[in-house]
Each structure stands twice: as structure tokens, then as C-alpha cells.
Image (cartoon, rainbow, N blue to C red; front, top):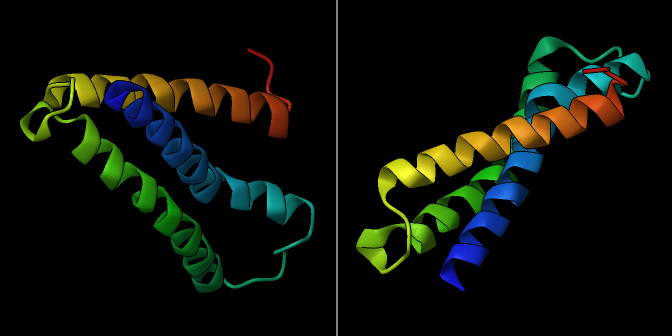
Length: 100
């Protein structure tokens, strides 16, 4: 079960990370935050990224073999990167209508 929870938390973390990094671009296009100064956009992104860390840190702690989890440090990183690419691909396709 630790492996499942680790991957689930990594997916949740990546959804927040992707929105923090790229969601503000769509919000700017749709005029939700169009007039915000850069500092405001940075604070907004940091606020969203806080939730990323709230999922990322437990995922790594639960999943790490040194804490009784099933994954080595290298495996955790590779899983993280694969999930990042998948989440970004889905996000950019749905939100920005990017065609691959």
C-alpha cells in the first residue's frame, strides 16, 4: 500500500506544481489575474505550490526504502519525473489545447 500512496501523493503534488508553474498563464489569458503585478502572480504561485509540498514531502517519506517504503531514492526521482511529464502533457492538452 505504501507504493500506491506514494504514487497517488506524487500525482496530487504534480497537479499542484503544474498549476503553480503554468496555470497563471491561463488565468492571465482569461483575465482572472490579467492586471496583477508580477509580485502578486509570484505570491499566488507560491500559495499553490505550498499544497504541492504538502503532498510531495509525505510521498517521499512514505515511499523511501530507508523509511520502510518500497522505493530507492533513484526510483522515487524517476517516478516523479515520469509523473511530471504525464501530468504536464494532460494539463497542456486540456487547458491550453496543445496538440501533441
